[in-house]
Image (cartoon, rainbow over all chains, first blue to last red; front, top):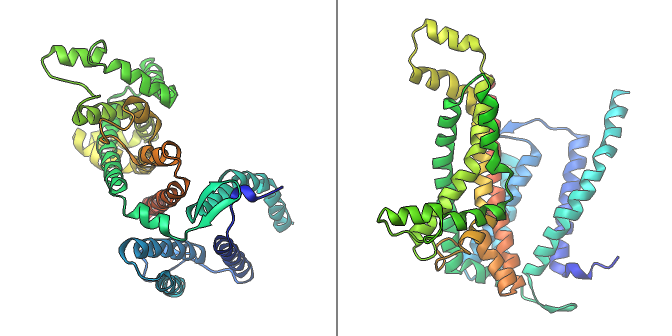
Length: 92
Length: 290
């Protein structure tokens, strides 16, 4: 089956592979060391999966805001998104 | 033994994963791929990075459509939820009229969405439509094809007529689940109708009303068929909501790249609100137990 109709590019392939790797790693982590819900600086109790979702969704909005509001390189937004993801995962 | 049985259950949900992969994940991946390329034909494309996102985010018509969409959804919730609760409260609790009321209320929900638009086109026509011509005969100029305000009123009326019954049915189900003992206790205490509503019925309906708010917000935010058939997004762009504007870009102008970028932004907005409402729903449940 050809996947030409999906019009894959190298950056989008890397993006989706990264998401799949993160999800797989989180699943293995959860199976080996199950974690409980907890409350951090976010106003809700969260599991690691919730925090990953919030982190990724926030990262998407950081990128959109960066594209819409600044003309600067996207790598800065990427750095901010990684920082946001790490902060949410650890202290969220 | 129990653990083995639980693991085997994963194979039963495997078909769902496969179906979701083909119906949602692969198309979503394709949309992401299209959003970063200018595609001229099969195998002919140029990588443009975030250009289409910049273009879409700077599009003033998109901003207007987004504002319109939020206004529409807010009005839908402000009208349909209180009205649905009021009708549910007024409905009989027992007897033959219960079935008659439920069937009558459910009728608009059974009509296909594009047919709803057609019904309302005819109903509100200023020359021959029952509603349109009646209003005009009363001396009020009404034409939803010419006046933006009339178009909004017509779309709102159609939406309220179509979807308030869903809120009524949910609220009625919530009311029916309240044990008779609560009402008897309130009667003994001499509680007023308002007190019964405020302290018994409303708290007991909180769960179903949250579901109603969720469903109505998401449905109204994604609305397409009814206003498209009724007004086509006009007059001008007065009733061009997000999905109508998206289809105009994707199919009207065949700008697949910007349309894909737009779709991703639309998806992210819906994802954010779904998450917020989901959390609200979870907290309502926890609040109820505590």
